[in-house]
Amino acid sequence: MVKKIFANIYVYLILLLMYLPILVIIAYSFTTAVNIGTWKGFSFDLYAQLFSEESKDIWIAVGNTVIIAVTSSVASVVLGTLGAIGTFYMGKKSKKFVEISTQIPIANAEIVIALSLTVMFVFLQQFIFGGQNLFSYWTLLIGHVVLSLPFVYLSVKPKLQQMDPHLYEAALDLGATPNQGLWKVIFPQILPGILSGFLLSITLSLDDFIVTAFTRGSGLLSGSSKIETLSTLIQAKIKKGPIPPAMRALTTIIVVGVILAVVGVTIYRNVKAKKVDERSGR
Image 1 (spheres, rainbow, N blue to C red):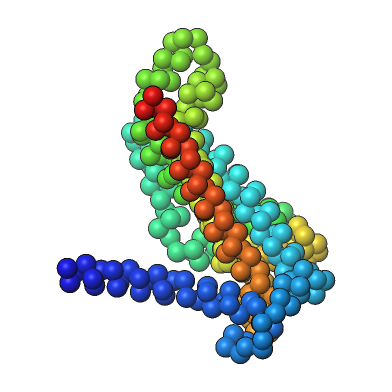
Image 2 (image 1 turned 45 degrees about the horizontal axis):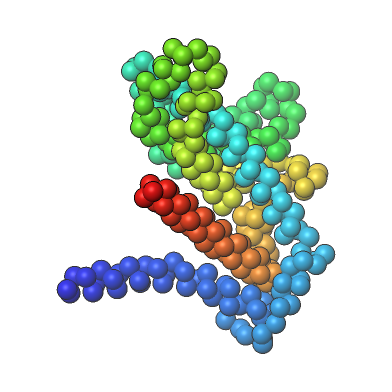
């Protein structure tokens, strides 16, 4: 009984430490105070400020962040899924080499990945492209793909191991081409792993700072200026002073959006499971 009480206290304490800062930010998004801790009365002025011309740089950063997250996640899912399928059908020695290679970026510190990519891009810039500046959206995209791809591979790999290999062989025996067997037999069975890898890639990309700071250049919505994402914009603002109060309103909108998405997915899964139970009961 005592252990259970302490276990519950520990869990709730951890949850409190995790969510209390978020709740504080949400609460102070309804006041115009520059610094958290000072209350200047309840108002929605920060939300109006967020959607005004004054916060244009924030929305440019949001746009850049979303574009990079989506494109890098799509590229990571395509490469990671095809790589996982190819590795699954390799010989033991080749498979072991590839699996060790994919685990290195996960084990390495993110700063090591960022520095390695920067050194590579600078080398190519100086000795292959004659000093032409390579740092752009494309170098940033490569950086995010390198960061996310191993996690996609690890998400798809268990689904391949759970798959019945005889189904693909049976499809080929029944006249299906290898491509048809791939799309109609293998992909439907590993789709949950692909979706998990995609969501994980987006999460890694959205909050990344180190790789972004080292590999970004000009482009996207930033035009001729360096690409700003939410993480790099906040870091730049902190150097000059306090974080813009409008960021608190944006944070609240993001948190509410995530909660609604989680609740929606949960309700959908419960309804779907209920329908399956009803059908099986019949």
